[in-house]
Amino acid sequence: MVCKEMIAMLLAGGQGSRLGVLTSAVAKPAVAFGGKYRIIDFPLSNCINSGIDTVGVLTQYQPLRLNSHIGIGIPWDLDRNNGGVTVLPPYEKSDNSEWYTGTANAIFQNLKYMESYNAEYVIILSGDHIYKMDYQEMLDFHKTNQADVTIAAMPVPIEEAGRFGIVITDQNKRIVEFEEKPEHPRSNMASMGIYIFSWKVLKDSLVLLKDQGNCDFGKHIIPYLHEHGAKMFAYEYNGYWKDVGTLSSYWQANMELIDLIPEFNLYEKYWKIYTKCDIIEPQYIAPEAVVEKSLIGEGSDIYGQVHSSVVGAGVTIGRGSVVRNSIIMKGVTIGENVTIDKGIIAEDSVIGDRVQIGFGEYAPNSYNPKVYASDLATIAEASVIPPDVRIGRNTAVAGVTTPDDYPDGQLAGGNVIIKEGESA
Image 1 (cartoon, rainbow, N blue to C red):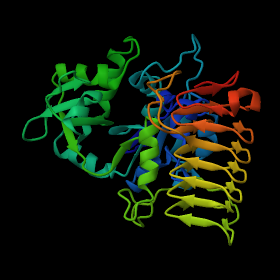
Image 2: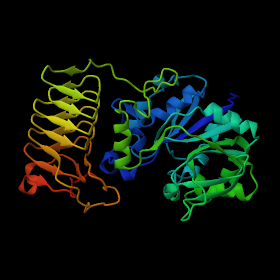
Image 3: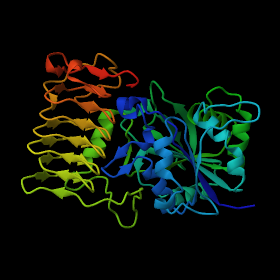
Image 4: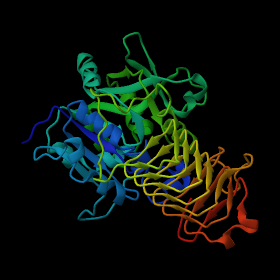
């Protein structure tokens, strides 16, 4: 039997519904980030940088882009005969076919995969956070304390603590209480959704709670183990960590990359972030173009102006166009004399000539105010915006639109256009 000290199980099946039209056709971990990366690149890179060479990636929602991106794991040096990366979608069993119904249920359904490596420890990861962490240091902490479970935790503002699982520890970092999204948090140490389990403890708890509906680590497994006296410790992390689960946090995290001294450095030699890279030509900046404080992806042709923006690979920005404070993803074509201010334009979209995106003032969104709650204009992937239209702030567009979709030639702030077959 193959033996590994620790293997990783990476939960990457989430829809990411708070990202609105950005995840209408792609799982959140596959959403582009920083011009050339996808969100899942960060935990995968953390694994190989931490010496973990066996990773199971659990997919479910819109898995095609994710599966294609991961492939056999070559960019992360995870193309291995002994271990490597394995994509683990839900599958049909002899008696039934069952979707993953919770984070712990997804892990339970892959017990045989984990058993095949005879690992002493299993680290559970989320595929939708931006951070760098040495999981080996966390494992050393786990072993030093002879823990059953170690939860990575970080301090957050107390007013935000109610959004997280909160741990309360003694002076030795042993967890004495665990509260899942408490109304009145008594600690600001928030669970990062990163867990190291000793294998027997993980297996036994998953089997015991296998009939629990929507079985989840934060809601079921962790409280159960705590109630039954498991040795649980909190590993405190104080580095950069971003949950890019909302449009505003996703936009903010991208904008932080272009700061003069970025808080999150993509280019550290000792902790590289790896990704699948297509072989494409270099970018072209025309003589009349202006590029200021921006990231520009390979193969992009810039004829207009780009200010304080993140531009992906293979993007075209036409003459006379001005892009500010925006995220332009891979393969987008922007026509001539276009203005974009605080826009998120998803992959392979086409923006017609003389379009204005991000005009006017913020207005509450009439379609989904919980998702669209900022002054961003968000365009879904493969959308088409016809020439000579104006799109206001806190808006969303998904699909191939025509001039008839824009009364008086505009989409006023707070409104959406979702074409048939698309979702928001």
